[in-house]
Length: 474
Image (cartoon, rainbow, N blue to C red):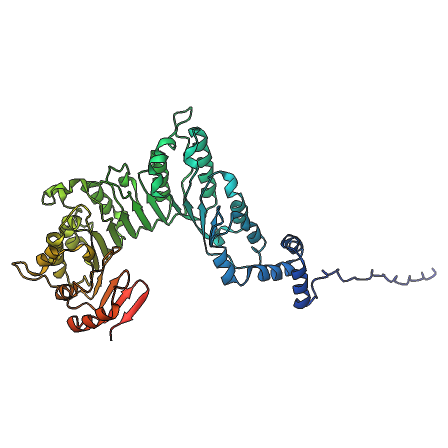
């Protein structure tokens, strides 16, 4: 058999490899890019930026500035485009720098004239491009001027319901603020009910709030705030409003395990309601409790009656509470509880009571109690409202002068019209001889003369504090 001829292996021809086409902008130096940027309009610049990431990065850096600059510039938006605030249309600029810019940590959105979903459109389109963990902390402020003039109550309620629902879905709102002056107007229309006899305004609850203010608005709005507070990690709660009327705010329904700061701004709550709220085990981490200077409890008609005293069940203390602020009448009803339930109390602010002409007697009793508490080293006192009779009650009383030698910091917590400094300096130093730091809202007149007098009559005083300004006396 003839040997078969072996076939020669065929040579495979590989197609020529070609380098992928590169963008014409890739190798351009920054100087050329700068020239391109300077010759384009804003609209054309961002049109090109959408197709070239490197130019996008360069253009946004040039247009928006450094991360610190644009994080500050794009932190507040207002429909009115007033002052330092930007219009909502500027969210279109931010959408282009989401990929290559650090996220903005905090934003404030002010709605001044309308509350329809259309006013939220640019914000919603921007926020949905950002992963939830990287979304900014958003604070909402409502300052409407025209929303109350409509006669179509059902249309208003439906529109506001859609507006709030979209905010909830953004999953980044930390606070939602409505100004006090709209209390009465909101009660007229926000409780409007539909054909099923249920309120038209019933958005889902927020789950991202860290602070909330529940005022006597409409019942539907109060219910929404309560549901949102219970579903969110609330750290700061304020309830009521600076007006003397019965507040229909169901604080017994609130259970806020992360609550740290409680403020009752006004309204006539009962001692039983406050006691029940503070007794809730979920609120044992409270660090500060403050009552507005005009706050008054229903049972405070006679502060000597048994019903007027705040009570907590056994073993229901507030071990983390360090600060309490209230007028002297309320503080007197709290003293027995504070001594037993608040072992770490460090500061007490005695606020002015607007309906009382004389403060000396109540303040003397509170200060006498503070003088027996070794842990309290900071006191706030409404000395701007003190009269000669009040100082006489503290100093020239038959039981002797009230002296608090362990207090090292003294503050005037209220806004002052006449500073209690020069004329009453001797009286203040007699009651608080150990004060090292004295905090006032603003500098007094003839400041240098006051400093010289303070050095003579108040040897322990070392510092004067006016907001963020510290003046050393050494």
